[in-house]
Image (cartoon, rainbow, N blue to C red; front, side, top):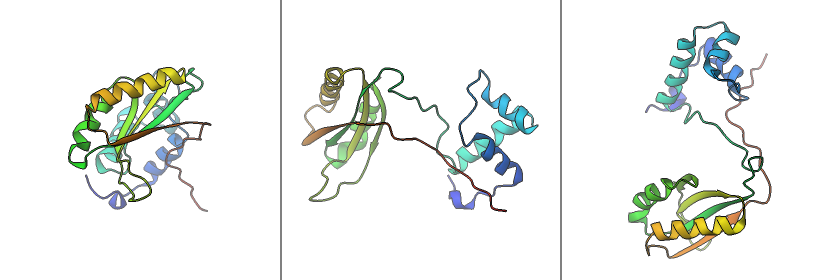
Length: 167
């Protein structure tokens, strides 16, 4: 992966960013719709998006569901203090659970924040979410020194990259 600051964006890239920055169209063939909007072959759109991914300029292209609208109102970020030397292996196991939407490592902050492993769970009830937390605890198999669940209170607006052209 190259440094994303080294990625050169030509005028067509800028047009593609503008066409997709509010999200891909919710149609059966979104890349085709974007290509048609820009007057490009669909392969050109796909090649450019893949170049952005390969270079690291874009980390991922993914759907971002609104869990609340889908009926999942007990959404919690589980946080775990596990041994650093096992964190990556344990995180891989936790991330593979079907109810974990994302799992990642973060640095601790001594005296303030002891947790280094994070996993987001989504459930329809708090009891269901807490049962998922217990499943994660079983996967972590005795390596947990402390943990917590931070339940969402409101939906935060999720947005991706935004481009503003001047002039």
